[in-house]
Each structure stands twice: as C-alpha cells, then as structure tokens.
Image (cartoon, rainbow, N blue to C red; front, side, top):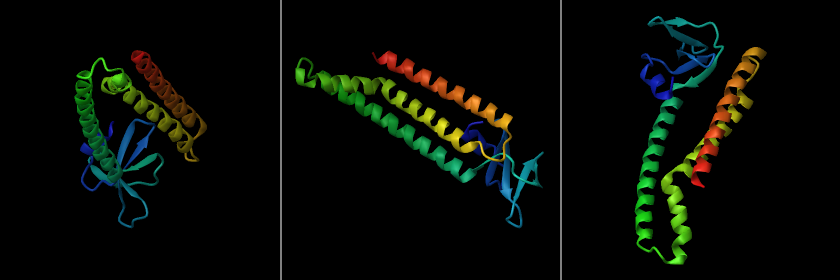
Amino acid sequence: MNDKEILAGAPDGATHIEVLASTKVYYLKKDKNGMGYAVFISNEWTTSMAVTGYVRSLADIARIVELEKERDAHARQAHRFAVFLCKTVEKLDGIPEFEPTKQMLSRLVSGNELQAHNLEQQAKGIKDFVANYCGDNMDFSQAERRIENLHNQANQLRAEVGTLQDGDE
C-alpha cells in the first residue's frame, strides 16, 4: 500500500498504522487510557495487547503526501521554466559563450539528471532505514529477510540510476 491508499482506507478515529511483515497494515488509535492502542479489525475497534510491527503516524503520512504533491508541482514548474530557458538559449545558437549553458539546460529538461539524483536519495534512505529498523522487536530471520528485500530494492534503484546516467551520455 502506498501512503495515499493508507490515508484513503483509514477508518474514523485512526491515528496510526502498524505495518507487519512489510505488507499487512493495521489501523490503530490510542486506547481510552492513553497507554496503548486499539486496532481496527473486521470493521471494529478492539483492544490490542502490544504493538509488534513498525508504527507510523497518519498525521505524518498525510504531511508526506502533502509535501510530495508540492514537490511534484515545483518539479513541473521547474521543468516548464527549463524548457522556456532552452528555447531562449536556442535563439542564441552559434555564440560559443552560451554552449555550456545550453548543455546544462538540455540535461535539466531531459529530467534524467534530476531523476538519477532522486533515485540515489531513495537508495540512501533505504540504507538508513535498514540501519535503524532492525531493532530488538524482530528476530534474526525476519531482520535478514527485510534487509535482503531492502538491499535488493536499493540495488534496483542504483541500476536505474546507471541506466539514466548512461542515457545522458
């Protein structure tokens, strides 16, 4: 489930989610005494004994979705501006002093350089996540499987970066 799907599926009163085995999502809310959580199962809230998975705040998820929308809007605006600049620079074709600027703007408009940077940041985020995520609440075999999955995802992102960088040359 992506963050938008998590928010769309949240029942009334939910404040957090718990993710188990990287696939199953349970909606949580603080219980009446504020010491633990109630879990939403089979369309009703039930008392949870203990949270055993990875817990995320729905407020944080909503903020992430909001920031992703803003980022995408800024990226579209930057792309339109870069296209405008390229068209302007093309009018100055043949003037040697503008050639480096033209090349830089062409890479920006292609999007590959920016996309490669974004993929590198995602791979770094996965590495940081693995370093912080495998704590005491997980047995070794679970940690090993999660690390292997995240390692594979990071390698896929790096391969995409290489493909994008090769396409720019």
